[in-house]
Length: 518
Image 1 (spheres, helix red, strand yellow):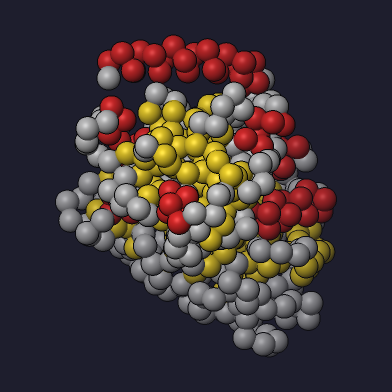
Image 2 (tube, rainbow, N blue to C red; image 1 turned 30 degrees about the horizontal axis):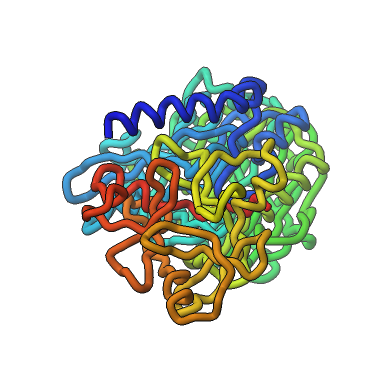
């Protein structure tokens, strides 16, 4: 295996040489959950609009196309150990399998949500061991969902959970400086307790007067009375009140946002005007709920530049948060975003593919690509070799030829030998399937025999390494699709064949189901 490792390093150097220039000019490696065009996140869109993100938080995905750092931190209750949860690839979705592996057999809480801008506004729970205070960290596993078909977890806040961040050098707008904010939340988990907020808050955890806060509120709270309906609504917490418009009177243009996934937006120029917008985060465009003057007594604003999530500003050093809400992602920006920028961000959110539950990516008829997860080979994909009929792995990227991309694309079919499992038909060789013969994988035309059907059927299982999926042979259930020396086999974890080696077996048999190259 030492020789193999050396060969791997040499090969990786040669294979990636052609992509170095792209990386140098800032083109990100494509995410596992989005199209193989260059990845763009909400914060890239805001930057293009001249209103860059000064804070960006999410438990579900990267908000910059190039971000490949940690999203959040979990803590095990059994031993107090901590683990960062990152993304599957740059610009991509959270690596939920890493959390599942770390938290197996015990409970976990989310203790931090990292600031993806690098400005240092990492949200930490307001309780002992966190920022101080009397609240606790939220349970990490209350709600699972999918983003682009990949499992992720929400920050599911109940009364008694809240998060806070403050850094004087983070660049969060203060005073009357303009700013914008958005978050993706849920219309199915909200209450009237004070106050499920995300945004600008006081640094001292006290109610410091009108304009000391500038945060999105999403709740059923009817602060000034006279509300139409029962909510929940997108409102502005400007301190000493939750505003649906430019006064304490109910804004008749307000609408309840009851979708499971909701986009909520607030922007405030700090002196004369603000706007509130909402949308279904899965589809459609933003609804302008309010655009007009600031409430009397709030111009100019007096923002202090701390960040709150899940509570009001005068919380939670000696008093508990009373609100409930769900946080998937959100960002704060410097400046007053244009309507066009807001619309582009909403389109990006809708395209991310938020969905309830944990959907299988192996839906018959779906086109997929299978990405290797071993550290040597994360740019490599399972493909058929044009020089012969063997299945191999090799690097595929946005600069690859159309043929290479198509060779690395598979159409999921109901299993030829077992319809509860799957078979993989070549996207560019109709009627030909991935099958094993003498334990090596080939692309062969379906000959209609019982043996071929069994050799071409695989049952998806949770990844043997804790990442992605492993593909179990239906007629050799101890064996899984594995790459070894860049050739594809079915292999057991130890055995008589060279490719049954236990070294790297778990990683070599684990695959990320990616968007199709072809």
